[in-house]
Length: 467
Image (cartoon, rainbow, N blue to C red; front, side, top):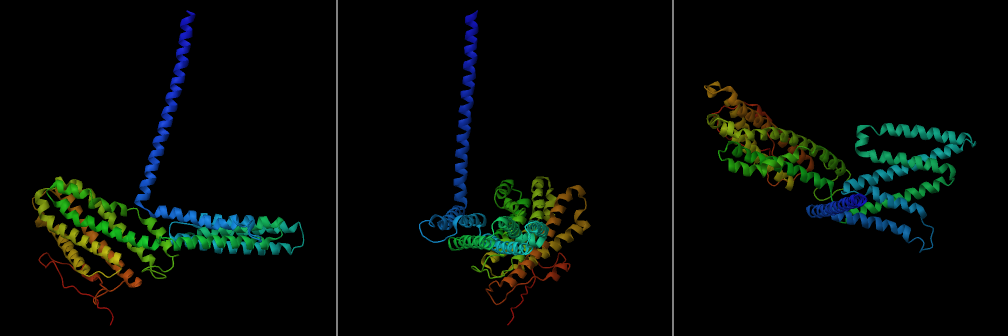
């Protein structure tokens, strides 16, 4: 009996060790799988955007360069910055960003805020010293510290100030507080403030020079390319929508969905990215085709209209699922006007995308806009003609009527985009490739009712450039 009990205890003990070993083995296996997955993700990230690798090398080079002020100081017998040189290293770390505009914006904010914060702290310290009393001096310093920090923190919430100078306001509070508090026991407050300002300016200069001189990434160019890409994606959807929705071949429609019909979805959530890029672009100096004080605000206006159009397209895309539910009789009645509107609007946006890329005025965009307007008016006339829908169940018409209404709204959005683009082209001085530029959309013609028996094109009028 005793032998059985001992064997059971040994078996239980072996089972515990075996479970522990299996758990540890599984833990190591899971850890190795995660390491391999992260390594593959990092490799793919570098392949997708090599600029990230270059940016990483630039940051390492800038920090190494600014660290020389600290490393080589003992080798040369001169009175350097000492421990304060670490402020230059810290400045490079917090200032260096992916784009030139972001780096320059943070550098300017940090430099100006540091100078103002140190200057105000030095003035407050000097004012407190005039009291001549060791008891009143800390009270005055504490009062001014509370008052200034409270006021500046409140101003930080102003929308215009927060949009571009939030980082600078934060650095002002930090510098003012540090100099005010540390300067109370260190009477060499002016030397300390001067050293800190100098090291921070050195860090800002090195970060900016490395960012600009070595493979610069411009926020303005990124914003420009993003808007152009948005036009391209929306135009691709519209060009194939008419064929995909009204085509009887479901196989061809499925192939289109996997390509052009899915690209517009990336346009829906671009507002924050465009606003950030526009904010950074305003800090950038003149580069390439982008002049100083380039109208970056116009890009936000165009981007907003493009998103509005993309949301309408998103609703339009839902009706691709009703493709097999539309009666052939209804499809035949509304097929041509819908296809015409979708195709012409697609041509408009594709031409806008090309004009945006080349920074030139579009050539034939007015023709496509006029054709889209006429097709939309014909579509509205068809929807309001009762004789066209006699003998047809009203519920069967709803899906196609909704599609037609959305297409008519997309025409309106396309007109707005062309008008907004024209304002941008005028402000940014896009290149005129012919003598008939700039091209302006006749908004009044959109308000004129067009009957179905009118021709599908109009005489195209161009505004002749000032002679």
